[in-house]
Amino acid sequence: MVTTKIGNALDFLTFFEGMPEPRQRAKVLYPLSEPLLCCLVGVICGANGWVEIEEYCEAKLGFLRRFLPFEQGIASHYTFSDVFNALDREAFASAFIAWAGALQENIREIIAIDGKTLRRSFDRARGRGAIHMISAWASGQRLVLGQMNVDAKTNEITAIPELLALLSLKGAIVTVDAIGYQKKIAKVIRSAGADYLLALKQNQETLHRDVIEFLEEQRTRGFADCAAGRWQTLETTDADHGRIEVRNHWIVDDIEWLKERHPEWLDLTSIAMVESLVQTPGGPTSSQTRYYIASLRANANEFATAARQHWGVGSGLHYVLDVVFREDDCRIRSQNGPANFATFRHLALNMLQRTQTPKKKSIRVKRGLAAISDEFLAQVLTAP
Image (cartoon, rainbow, N blue to C red; front, side, top):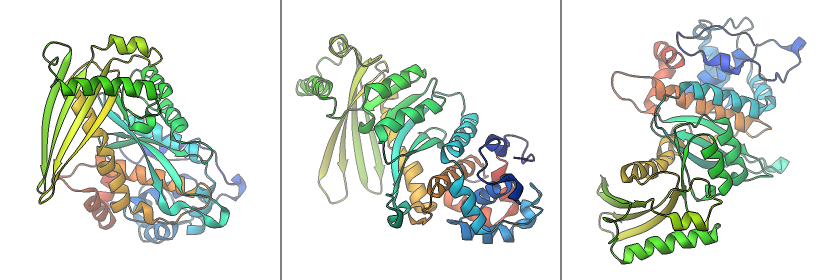
């Protein structure tokens, strides 16, 4: 693939060079870089399908020629569909992960792993169910670091280690919901030089029982040992639109007895608990308690931040994909098209997220501004 420089910082197109070309070389009219740039620009500016991308890029041909030749003009939506239906989704996702990895800053990042189903991606005529994607979300930088399609023959438990193996995790805290409460996942995270914070689930019955019985015993005693042992506690309060949530956190790393009983959990260092009390206007107070194991030392502030930011993947990623990018309304269904279009959404989201504006603007507003302002669209594509 031949590319030209787009910006003075990262040239994202170079990360997609060398991908297997699905077309016969002699019949190629449009270098892969051109359909790729068209699709990215279209998604940034609000397109949700191949036809919309073609129409928008036809109107923006002069702008696009600032970056690539487009000697044959804009490809048809049939070409976009054919190319990205056939383009290897794993190679495309790997190229995205390499690009996203180059954006990572050298900070103690919290990386949340969570899954989402693309509801309209099912193909009943071909007997295919909806695609389920797992994503890695850098909570601090608010960037998608990678994603992987969960194949129909596998599940999240087998796909998560494969995704983690592709990421740069050194120094990070990786949080996984109860589905990731697996010894193998803990080992992959520690082998990558990261810490884990895993929510408990009953599939690990003995460890689950041991942790909960110990923590609940301490709760009934009023956590009398908190001052004497290696315990840390923290209370936080959030208020939003009349809803008040008080969260009490407890974490302890004086658990030699537990490590001796469960040596198969690599670097198990602490166990923790969060009790959430939620008061809604005019309603009763509800409570929920969640339990965790971690390779972290007992630090209540760090634990509270990691546990809280894990749920940010819902509002920072899944909500934005659903509401702003209308992911669940997308009707692309053939072959690799749904997975590759999901990668385009992640590319667009990361670029919009990194684009700085004088006044803070939402992703929705940035998409609208990019659609009407060539200057701002160029800024999005060249954001350092």
